[in-house]
Length: 257
Image 1 (tube, rainbow, N blue to C red):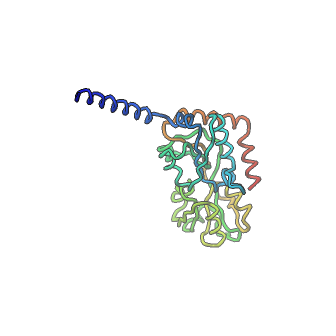
Image 2 (cartoon, helix red, strand yellow):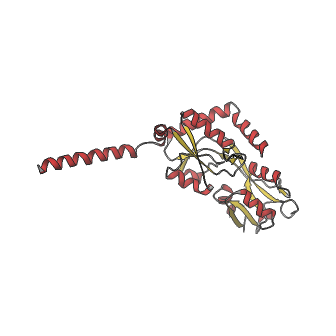
């Protein structure tokens, strides 16, 4: 009797381990198809790539790409709007399935996530007050107080880009620009299109045209090793680029800014 119970126990444990192993091996792609929903992680304070309209819906270039990805997979799209610097941890913990947030693909980030093909080329620019003529070259930024958005490439690169920089970090570029307008900081380093929208909306701010930095590429990020999902995303990006739709999205949402 005891042997019979022990044997039954072993069978149950073995079955549980097999079931657990099967669940553990399930890819993000399989999970997405199974639950019929894909979760997009973003920070909706980065026009024209993502922002919220009057109804609270997230719109923008990345929203269009995310919707196209969901359509290709035949699943619903769910949006998780969070602080920009929270996105990597959310991806790693499977809170979100992919990042689309004007997100630059670079070597440092590629250590912990995989990237799609690039879909947009951007560059860092410098925003200053229009009446401040003291900043016209990169060297002029040395020792100045600079505002950046936490976790962005502007944030991670500012120390190497500007000698002796005094860095103030913000949850959004808009908050940094507001402090710049108030004279609390000397300049803001930001991606070019969001910066152009900010200076278009806020009187008294300009982009320093004589200062330029290396180009960077926006891409979609997924968890390491999620090749099946990444292949699907790359297919969507290829199609959108070939049709000229991404250029159309950029033009549409930039003109709305």
